Image (cartoon, rainbow, N blue to C red):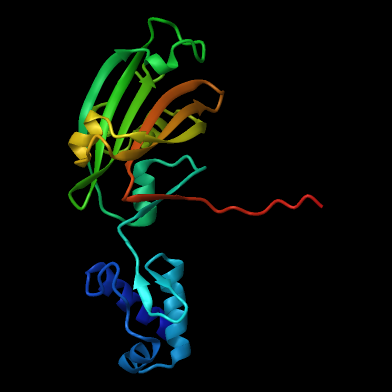
Length: 238
């Protein structure tokens, strides 16, 4: 491991344990170089890595400002389960099951995807907590004609792992829509928001490999705790 990587890990730990608090400034490059007994060039490499990973904002002529590192990044285009995201990003979380019931076709799906009027859906509501704070409320409607039942212990773990590994379903793609919405009663109750606060709602219509619609998901995110990111490359037309 290079010197700048070791210093990065030390500074990262100090930011995470609030030795350097959000909004405060790190010591100057000269001060850090003296503290760690390295060159300013090594410190610059460390600060560059901290910047790239969202821990600081380097401002010209000023010290490095510590950013809100409690934000969690969600991919825009990917189809990934919450458990997979948690593993990829390395944050700890707990899930609370609010509802697991059978309901009729959700109003927003009436007349779509050739659904029968008497079809039943499994209705799940789960609250995702990080550091004791509810930051996501996931609401799912899954066609019972495709998934007969979802045990509570599965809902508390990973429904996608259950769908793919236990039921052998081939989940292929989703159509997503992102909207800013006023916090509803459940958002206000579980995320401690006001009726004037907003959340980001990510609605996904999920399809199997054979293009069969099977799941509607509404994932409601605390506005101040999450960011949505994607790698974008410029398309050249010449």
